[in-house]
Image (cartoon, rainbow, N blue to C red; front, side):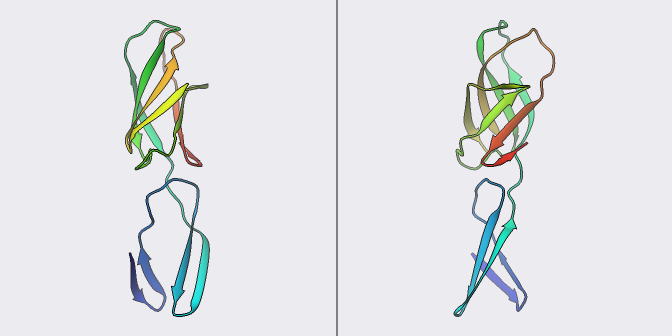
Length: 120
């Protein structure tokens, strides 16, 4: 939906999605204008990861909580530390699951998520 506000101002809502940039095309009567990189989608933001107690070297599920994982399944890819998840399962815009072999006996690992072309 597009809302005309003045000769120099219109408002519209971008479709749900992921990626680095979105283009916008505006048509008024017979004139067409295009603006490349008109908007950006925010990067995914994982802020919590939890896993069940498991023996080192065993496969397990790491549940990721955060924001902006996508309002649909855009094939996210997660990693814990330097290890990529063997599979990342999208659950919602705020949750995903990482299937990975757990190594080590504890400690803190940074978690990152890539959705579309954006990583966080």
